[in-house]
Length: 48
Image 1 (cartoon, rainbow, N blue to C red):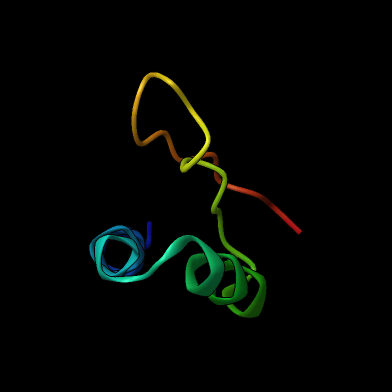
Image 2: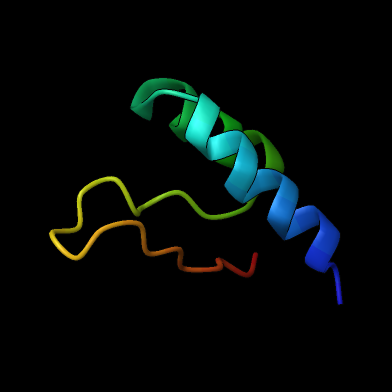
């Protein structure tokens, strides 16, 4: 369980813009498709 890592990403996401968030996710192979949801921030973990 890497809760610390996920929390770091989520907290960092608040400071990053949509463009930076996209690059950040790509580099970390994480998730970043929660800036286009009408229900607010929703993170989807990507595996691989």
